[in-house]
Length: 318
Image 1 (tube, rainbow, N blue to C red):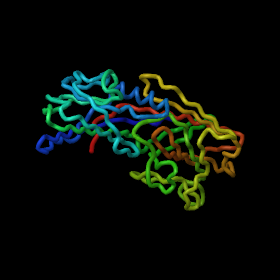
Image 2: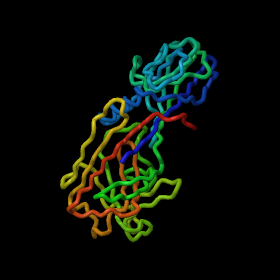
Image 3: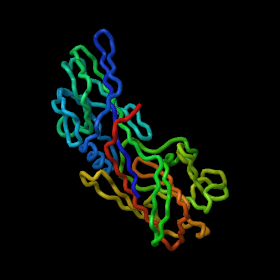
Image 4: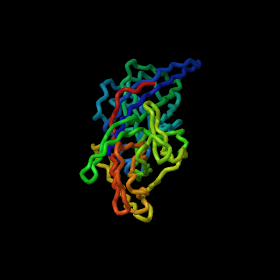
């Protein structure tokens, strides 16, 4: 099972002159580079983190391409720090010292070091910006992940195909369904799963989940209450194992396989089967709804391999 997401971002340059007059560029699209995608993978495999620590400015004029790793002609850089973080976005802020820049700026980028081939993203400015030595320069950078909100799929168990629909879900620990999970960047984490049972997910007489097109789905309910059937966060004693992959540069994905085989993780009665699955992995949460319940007894094993993949997306919109 693969969960894919695209990343894009926008820069905003705010210049204040010595008289207090402000020149605001508005949001400027950029390209997330292959080096940035690889850095997300290595950080994710190590437990997560941000590939953005510095904003860089330069005078280069080439069109950004995915294989670039640095600015064309860097003239300045400054450390940045996150100021906001939501379920699928993070905004960073950077302040350059007065007098640090003097000249016309034509490119901007971000990375995890102050210089060198460690660029996360780059943008060529459509309109060059003149910065005087007396100007104060502030730069904002917002990076976003864009996961699919709904997607069909299927799994094959004992030669039988079970079709499902997945929905971008609300976050773990929030059974009142108010927020989504995660940060902008992926992380190599264990899979958390909640299984729902019941032949008919449209009634409150059994465990179920539901979703309405255009709205995030609610967690599974039982008789109208937000109670999961099984909340599985491996590893736990009594029959849960998991293993994670290592990141290979250029692949832009990580895998995690979890297995549940204890008899305590079987619906009662077993004939009811598993109708839904709520999973959290990396920086995402999803709910899956199977058209036909999957049978599970105390003697059988559930193994779930999740692939978290990422790519550079197109221009973002505000």
